[in-house]
Length: 598
Image (cartoon, rainbow, N blue to C red; front, side, top):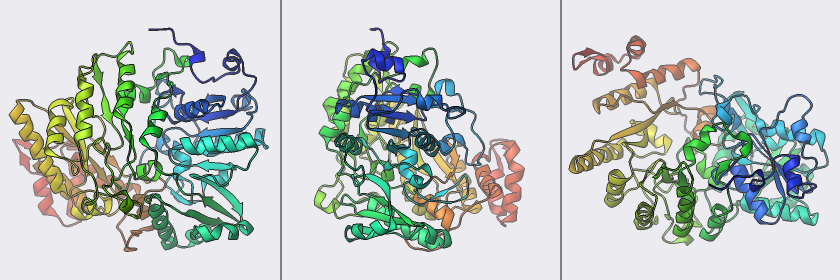
């Protein structure tokens, strides 16, 4: 393999800039993640996109925010602006469990070392840069800024917070997949024009500037009204979600004190040519050489995987993908995908196995409306619930063609599907192909729950769909003489879920001979339907009350039911079931089974 040089990456130090002959950079990106030059890492995508547009871009990964701020000073003043991302995750989700316990590692840091980014990373970085360089514009983006662009509930402080623009002092916020917006901002900055008003951005104006924007805008309840009224906050969320799910959105305005946060509509969905151009940029597909001898866990997970599309029309209540990437699925061309795989086969440690051919949902590739004029008028948050939209094209032929073309490539022994598969969106041919040729012994799917009313709130399909798919999975395995497992994911303490619902889930999965492994306690994250229900106790679509398990004790009482088969959990489960007067569930869940007293 050719020697990898630091000069092959975007520069991270003054010396690396000098090697390139730069006195300064046009744009300097600060990131809470380590610098991995790969299309799965946002800082690399934005950096390479701006580079391709003719700008000199430098990156400062994981700067030290203590002491004299030397990492924030070391590259000097950019010619156009600073850009900030907390990284691939919200920093608070990265740092804390559902029980608000500090995590002991960070997958986006060399050797998984914790403590390399601050809590509320975007705000901390932005404030420091504003203190050091008050006259230089600061543009914030990435998942953390995107999901906090308007008033939002913060689980870790247990209160509503205003837009991250307010506390961070940033000039502009870019939300979603930001290639187009970032190039437009750079072009405006280059011309000395205002950075305000670009599509897919948010910014703050004074109250006396609002009137000029109103004819083409939707006015939301103010931050102060939301503080006083949970119903007002739920109404805001409904308007924001509807606006996220339409192709032709409108400008949103949310008053805050004597100012207002303005959110411009999203750009039109990318074309195939545009998304190909993003993935075909000259990524090194490696961590920066400064991390030599260290392992970045998040990179190790995706280094031999390929993302084939963006966006998701599933609309799950607890998920932020549609709010960030959009509901419309944007797919890469077959040529672009195969070109990336050819690069992977040339990597020295590649052994012939692709870990994932997928996307946000693995089996939505090239799916869209049959009549896109109907989609342009649609505000539905999901194309799959309560039933699949009749306008949805469900042709799996392009996806199967990709799978077969990849497996026929020199250097490829097998390709796996590691991304989530929607079993409620599946043809028999597609299901059979995946089960026979793309499972690494265990296929992970996400029913999330068993109880109908909880699944409805989650915007997930009936559990009957999972049972039918499981039967199909086992039948295909029997016919082929293979022995593979299906591994279901479940969530506890989701809004709408009671202790009794969790007990029923445990009984149901026990009857199916599952001892659950892939489970999680619901964590409220900014800008999801489920989080809005958690905070308000209301369903924004109906304004009807929703049960919420809010305390640590309530959440742990629900979570214990995942582990009914562990002796140390059984007495707690027994006491809980007796307290809700369900001795029948004690018998079903803890009765003797195969000679063992469960």
